[in-house]
Length: 286
Image (cartoon, rainbow, N blue to C red):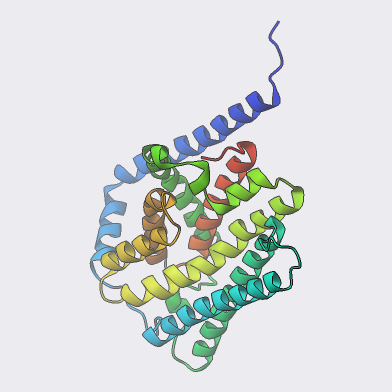
């Protein structure tokens, strides 16, 4: 008679099953793409010349969104400094929950301020929502494109994770993974999940894809995707930056090909959500 699996064995089996399923789906869609000559030709042709747009993102709007991003960081840093200065104990380090609250405040501020800049620029007639990837038509197609991009990104990301495994240590793991290991609690898990699945995709796709890539792709789409992807990966720190390069390239391609902010947010959220789920099942992290 077979013995029942332990909780750790069940977790390991579930992680393997989830990852295996996503990898198979992703490889299947890569096979379909590589055997679809017509779609490859359309993609290649679309990257060779800028997409026509009446009122795309401008340099001034991109600069203002960048300032909004930096301003949010400065505000949160100031709040953290004030919090530490009012602490009576000799140890002025913040708790995990305090850091998570500030992370949520920072990402929320960044998103709200950048959207505020976009709304103001639209009201002034400087840009047009649709030309910046904000489409209200074919929502299902945009969501499907995001999920398809997620599935296709996973096999390559997983390969890069394996190649960089030698550089990964508990000390250089993502700060959220470290928090989940050191301070496991339902509240922390909820705040981390909200931050990585909702706030991070909204803010980062607005800055990197809509503003940065959107500005440069008006001249050279392929170069814009490559440069933006490199910057996106670098800001996430080593060694995660290496494995995030293929994800960023696919995000950039999806944004340009479908002209869709929604597709990128869905792709980003699906990726972060999947990695968050794996981290919950495997507290040691990847």
